[in-house]
Image 1 (cartoon, rainbow, N blue to C red):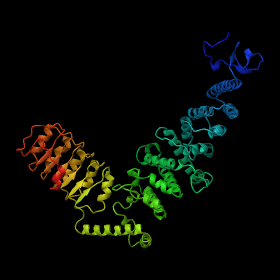
Image 2 (tube, rainbow, N blue to C red):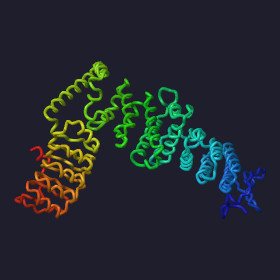
Image 3 (cartoon, one colour):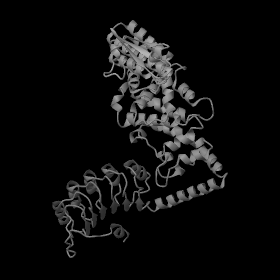
Image 4 (cartoon, one colour):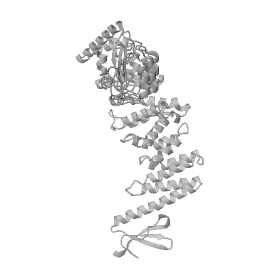
Length: 543
């Protein structure tokens, strides 16, 4: 018969395959498939296609046989021989397609599923045999899972580092999306942690970073630095924020030390220094990490490296990115750069002398002295009276600002459009002189309101517009008898809650309840407890 096949041929039915060379044009460029008692001829139009088909079919048959043997055979020696055989075939194959991943994935699944049945020496031999293929491909998810499983043995075997180091280098030099491929991030984190656990100088984290950066003054691979920084930040969040339970208690401190050491190694390279500080702006580090003494001392050491550098772009990078936002230097001097180094420190005079060298630095030095003088005058008068915190500031930002002691006598505080929550109430109750508080569009809720009402007796105006406040927290406001102006626009206030509120606040003059359940269009302006009054709250504050 001739023409197209009516049914497909399964690889399991093919016993052998060979090419046919014939001068007969009707049988030229044919491939013979033996299927038990019958044979099938496949004819292609060109000689190169004949070779491609022949090699491809032989590879598929070999892979099917390989997978069957390693998944059913219990003899370790036979499995190792089959792996060596398939590796030899793959390396000699002229196929243009990437055929290396399939045998690697098959071996990876074997090691994962037979973890308890394969001895340490067998796992080692399998990794060494398959290593010529591993160094030629980007690791798949299965390979990453196998490596993670093998890394659980402490210390990590050296053969694993030898086998997977080329894969780690390939990933670090690639433009990767760790959000889309999280197993790449886990693989690199496991590899870096395994390196740090080695005691040999030949297998160390420092040696690996040196090999990735290469011997030139400027690293020729632009993606290496962002990838290393991303790995470090992800590890810090894993330790302090999201998945600390995935790390055993015995290795938690060692895990932290690994990435502290990695950051210190990165900061040693002059070409990376300006870029890493810029990448870390604004500071994307968990708040718990900034409260950890070991990590905070590391940051202080890194900051000193930047301060001692003689390049202007490095100095600019440790300052805030934009006006009103915290920079690296604010971790140790929340409000004033003049306090980074005390005046009685011997280095203070050296730095001041250095700042006198250029016109720009002299101007900055003069401005610093003016700010110090102004601060001294304000502190003599009792400190600042009005403060507007920049948008998107957090609870920690507010705590850092108030910790300076310059705002203890505040009368007006605006936290509008910041990211503060009810947790900042513990800081707000320290401001005993506060009379005006603006919490517009924050996450300040019922828990914080109850704390405020128990401590701030002098509060006269309060803006809770677009906050998650409900009747449970608003009910506590009835104890604030001095309250005159109240904005509850777009809160979860109910009609009953409004009636209870107005009945117990005799000094209340203005209240805004638009877009709440208590919003009634009919306004009785003669009543001193209006249901709905349009009032510009900010203008009242100015008055």
